[in-house]
Image (cartoon, rainbow, N blue to C red; front, side, top):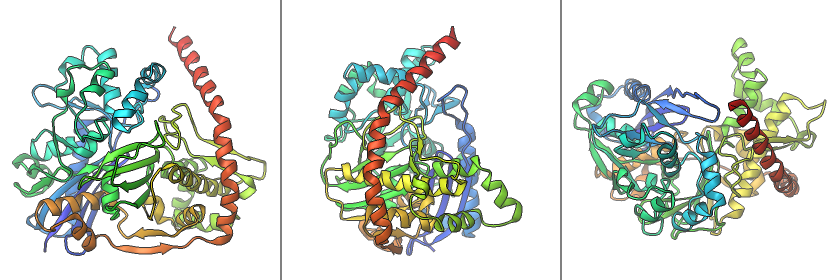
Length: 516
């Protein structure tokens, strides 16, 4: 049997999935929690050795569940969360701690850049709205605040590049992760001008060689084979950043095809045949295979993390586990029994330290719930969170200056039937549900299969391996309610902007007093 291994190094969980190369059927899957550290408020770090150990254990687990000899793995692809700062020193040794993309330590520096017009100029080159956790921002922060560490940095890349390095010993990145550094999005290359604007003149050499998305990066070393159970010499493709990998794994390869991912982040990605820069200063623009781009409008703290928060806050997880019931089945049943917008609740899903990243960039934004009353129940909050995320989906796609012909929906949150019903009603259009939950892993497995010569094109690979599970039609009554509510959702968001800024200033004053 010919099989492909897809590895998705996630923010909260690392997944390794063995796929049948002919059908896309999952043969084996293993997950390992990603341990993170927060030594200061808004910081988010990972221990690089612990991260690699988690990846290796996930690979072993997937191989064991698949029950296949490692020799059946034709090739490996790796995806990972984009952004952050994963650094090697001059001896090729990884820094003990990596900075992950949700990190907010550079927020003050980024605000200075915003005030001085740097952010706008970088956007004009890159099509990416800078957030604190982007590599160029963190690198500039390191230069300013860690002069003891900065000179020791020899190479900077992203999470999936680190995994590739441990698998193959090769130091490289790819076009998709370069997009988020960010780069010259039109020329599809490193931008010296971006480095100059960010006060890092002469430092572009810290970016290693940039490979095409899915190109061969190397082969599994003897050491990595011992650690993972893979065969030495197995081909490893460069893979892609998670946003691009998820689009490929959902089959959104052609212009006009979109994919919404309800994961830790809430990503709305549209494949386009040109660099779409509107709305200016908002969202992200990533490089895709075959000379295409991906316009990404995402709320980085607006996905399943919101649902996790409310479930943990009200102890539903512990209650479900105690009596052996399936938590999400019970929650979905109870939430479905409620009417749309129960009690007039409206939730704005901006829980992450990055704030609101679409359809406008408001780093000071945070989540809010409008309409709380004495009759508000925890399950009403659960439904309102699903609805708030869906209304932000309408917000995001409505802002993209390009046609959206088809929307595919995936991610862990899309496994919840009610949530995708709500999304279909909010958008008032059909949504296509793909079978594979781990679309990031499937996307890089497709790239690996192409690199190994199993498919003549990515389209051929997607035709074999991407399986459509369902098509969700919008409920007319729900669609009518959400259409009426969307204007209020948008107006509340606009009205809260000054309050978000005032809150951030208040927190900054408090931090200054505590420091003194």
